[in-house]
Image 1 (spheres, helix red, strand yellow):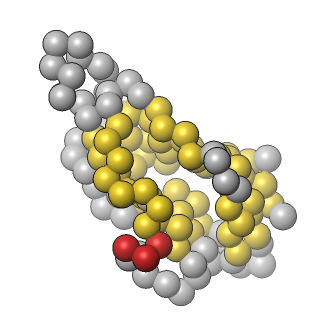
Image 2 (tube, helix red, strand yellow):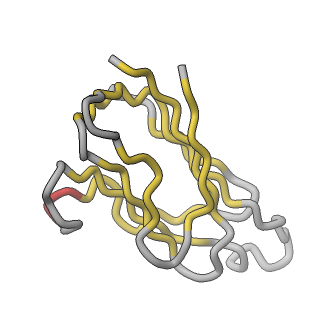
Length: 112
């Protein structure tokens, strides 16, 4: 098993790109909002993000979006693990956060 961890920017961020001649089974994707929770101003620290599973040669679009503007409060972690995803060479997982950019993602995967 391998992991890849990446800070999510407010531009397209590759979380995982499958190299040529490889196939990966994605087991889990975790996205953490590293901002410190503020119980007085709970609306502060909330960051939205999108997640795309993009086939080799395709562009990011609404047709490959699997998470749309998910609100992640400060100090919380979202786990995407209900289904296993198999990616082939050139396929990628792309995230896009909005400012502030306080999100980090970890992808757990196996070569198959």
